[in-house]
Amino acid sequence: MSSISENLKKVLSTLPDDVRLVAVSKYHPAESILEAYNEGQRVFGESHVQELQVKHETLPNDIQWHFIGHLQTNKVKYIAPYVSMIEAVDSLRLLQEIERQAAKCGRVVDVLLELHIAEEETKYGLTINDCRQLLEEGEWRQMEHVRICGLMMMASYVEDNDQIAREMSLAADFFDEVKERFFADADYFCERSWGMSHDYLIACRCRSTMVRIGTTIFGERT
Ligand SMILES: *Cc1c(COP(=O)(O)O)cnc(C)c1O
Image (cartoon, rainbow, N blue to C red; front, side, top):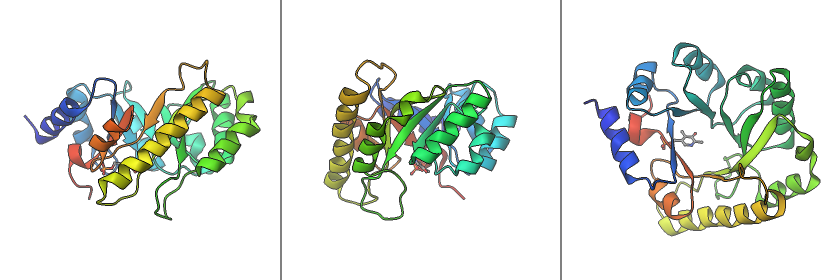
């Protein structure tokens, strides 16, 4: 058995039943993805549009591709025809462009709103206040080709597990607020995407529904 399938099985065995795995395959070759695919994994995460384009064209078409990186508005058009979920929507402008491009191809694209809660300044995402404001302004309600399915975030990259858990719990509490105020009747608003290789077990304790794991499955990226 290859190490990728061993790693994948190990990760899956540690996930609670209600937490889904996004196998983050960025920078890893098609063969690696196929090893995980042959073990039954179908959801993969990529963060570069060009790389995703090539992989989408060459790999099995029942793969569900999640775009997890920062997405420039001028590149939405390339992935709108097939992407399964855009996880890191961090502006109204990006949401508008996804709506426009999804409409063009007659699709409804699932998205998550990315929160910036971590202390690091380099990370993208909406502050809790900006996210609340975007939802209150309500333009998203007219968008028939995007479906806001939940929230996504990255915790600070620190040793302090308590800090990681605090940040994830803050996101989970905010999810509850958003659910109640804006999506109470929308069953599809149910995703909390947090947890990566180094902190996914913490994420599972902090109400994650979707973990994005790369290195632990595929090894170091080159
Ligand atoms: C690369 C990446 C991951 C996976 O990180 P690992 O540490 O390799 O598990 C998760 N989420 C996002 C947004 C990423 O860019």
